[in-house]
Image (cartoon, rainbow, N blue to C red; front, top):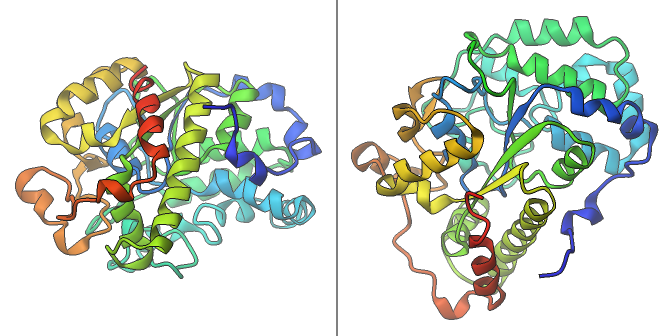
Length: 352
């Protein structure tokens, strides 16, 4: 493996005043737990298993705030700064769901119950508010909104709006815990350039990175995006490029900042027989106590169905405690040859 970082080509100019100003203060923000592997790699599974742990803050759900800062600055830092200056806190809230305020939709229950994060349609413009099937969560949106409005105060640097947003997002939980080992918790799939920037500037965090084997990632990705389980050249190229580039970048981050990243295999947590041993290892790395609730997928302590791309099979989880795996075996001869060496290298970093 070389030291290429694929997401570098999609990184905005980090030498602007917005990114440079106060960046030495990022290390002063209280400790944060981040859950971020590639999409369709088990992010929802991991944070739903951690959800009930009394040593962690409640996570209201996945948020697009952090990646949107980078995406919008990549497109035009001038437009981003203009919107920040003009729209202030309302601009920050609308990044939570990519282009709309995700949290107000949940608060007002303006939710399409047939679309959740794992069943997002290819042409769906925003992040679906629903995290898991049949699960609508109560949140304290007024506290979140009021905090942002009251404390924005011309926050025109990355440090200032990131700190502000972490504090506001924590208020979405109706019953904050008092024994948190981490002061903040944040989940968003696919963060790489963002995590590299945070690590380079000594932000105090640990990131849990679930990685799924390509053989099952393929079906989850293609089912979610194209509503198909076929194996053809177009789909294979699509799935492989995403899996390879993201996995490679997460290995890069782990090698560069080993204490800030813990890579874990999705399959160890999907399998109920392996889950206890795997959760204990993860909790040990995070320096939190393993609890029985960590064997059950929950959201705000309520049991949830899996965030699956296969909705008609999702109820299998209620019977056997297993996440659904399609009844299709990926032909070994069609797996890209690079995969086997890369996954062998990847396994060396699991739980370390």
